[in-house]
Amino acid sequence: MKKLLMNKSYQRLLMILFLLMITGFADQFVVVDKLIALGGDRIAVSVKFAIQSLMEIPIYLFSAKLFKKFEPSRLLLVAALMTGVKFVAYGFCATPLWVLIVAALQLFTHPIIVLTSKLLIQEVTPKQLAASAQIVGFAIYFGISGFLTPVIGTWLVERFDFNITCWIFACIAIIPTWMIIKMRKRKMNQPA
Image 1 (tube, rainbow, N blue to C red):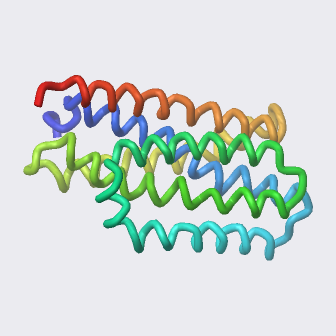
Image 2 (cartoon, helix red, strand yellow):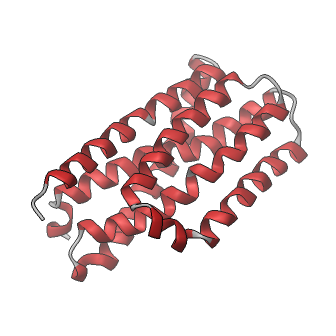
């Protein structure tokens, strides 16, 4: 465990995934609350989750082809950028219908983050620590972000409003985007 947690590449990757998952959970909490505040009902909430689940299916089905064409860090960069775009768009939504339309951007976010996380964790950790790295990583970037996001989201909405809160979460997505760009540069500058 000590060797794993002292791995700088692993630490950076977990921070990237942690920040992206915070925005992912905000999509489940803050955006759903905004949808209801705009007049959406239980059916609209169900449709939102159905649209997002439907958008994820092609990515999971064709992930092998996707990873043959693009390296995982490039896909993660796209997912981070699109996470920010999605939350900027959520901030501008003025009707439940627009929230549902923006929810379709899930195609470019969550499933890519999930798939690339597994591959990138394998890349930055020794084989003998691969299983532990996945479990510890999941606990940190998924578990802790799932705990913190509702608290942060509620505090932000009460302090500001839904739109500004969505834009704050969009700003949060800038940090992992920048970190991924730095990670890719570092990788390209490493001797072969």
